[in-house]
Length: 95
Image 1 (cartoon, rainbow, N blue to C red):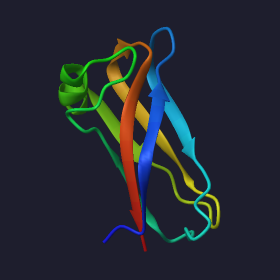
Image 2 (tube, helix red, strand yellow):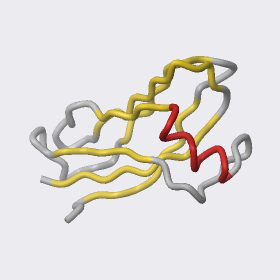
Image 3 (spheres, one colour):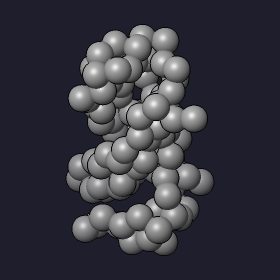
Image 4 (cartoon, rainbow, N blue to C red):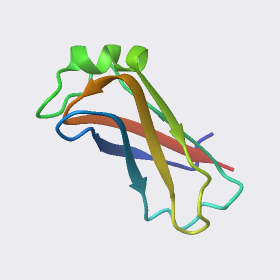
């Protein structure tokens, strides 16, 4: 069961195949916690529709860095394609 959960906005800016976002404010996360990030199919941003989010997982790999105890972790996104602007991602972590 997830201990922490939330959403973040990842920004590919004006056209990139890599992006990252730091998730902070996780006071009870430990250095051995496990974190995961994923797309939800009905999410939207000002720049991308629910349809874009539905298929983002087919184009974008999401990974999470090792947590920093008492702070949080970083979500990394990489794709073979040049993407622009923001996508919403969901995250969870647990011990």
